[in-house]
Length: 436
Image 1 (cartoon, rainbow, N blue to C red):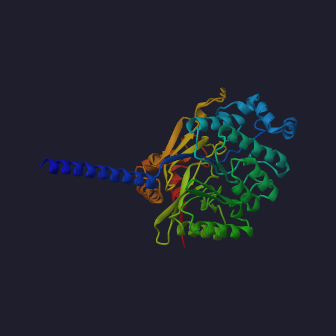
Image 2 (image 1 turned 60 degrees about the vertical axis):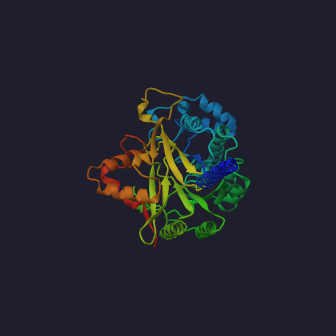
Image 3 (image 1 turned 135 degrees about the horizontal axis):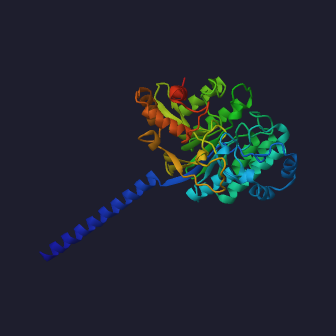
């Protein structure tokens, strides 16, 4: 009898061990499948002006042209116009104080990002082709500051419409592509940098994620560049690649309607080709990113059955040129699926710093977030589309008030180009991109 009891006891212990082992393996498998939460920085529209406050100072301009970018920092730190931060920076490009403050706050909020995405427009507004040398040094200066704050971190930059040695919106030439890629080395890996130099667009793989960076200058409304078809074919080939599972698309100018003047951002044919491509590979495209408007927004892609299948985030800017609060974003995403689970836009409330006062250090402590700011269940095409429908039906206008705060990144500044209750449907529904 004792032997039977001992045998039963040993059998029970053995079954318990096996069950624990099975449970442990199951939990491990689930963890691997679900992935860990990682965080990255997303930045756009820096528009740093090295001549801020002194645009007609030819002596200063000559000094900047002949000095090293290491000397630039010393000069800017000793210049009140460049270092001081207050409400006078509203509707202005970024001075050194805003740029440095943004980087300091990024470093405080996320010291070790998985990677950094910059969605274009480093050059100041109004720069001319004659400013090519100053443009080159400006990009190198910005890149050096990023690399000093985040040594060894992969930085994935897109080019904006101001980022060219030609006039605004002009296509970048071979010299610019070389200089731009070299400025970000070695934080931009060698393979992607060489691809950028060769064709003006590139891919960069980090972990389970492939970031496909394409050049919207080729697609901009009114242009007729033969390279546009090549780039769209290249995009389709990358998405069709069987080895490609998780993709983020990155560019500067978004597709769809420019609600400021009711014109299209891109030419019609490439716009539809791009929409159809994103819809076709929606299972792979986990996020699309653009900027350009300086505000916080989104686009939703719909398939041929009018079902929401993918989305694009339009991220706000570092500079305050449009009357917006300066902002940067931390995106949290699943390392296995590359799906974004939370976005936090930190912004600096410039209006709260009186024009007759100045600070050189500022806390970017105010936030808007997704999914919370728009009361979404999750950050995805379905919930963003539902938000648009709910906002349209909401007679109380509470949802559009939420959208306004999200869109303007918290600013209360009146602006002819900011969202308003009367125009919200134009912003929301114009951003719907439908496959045909």
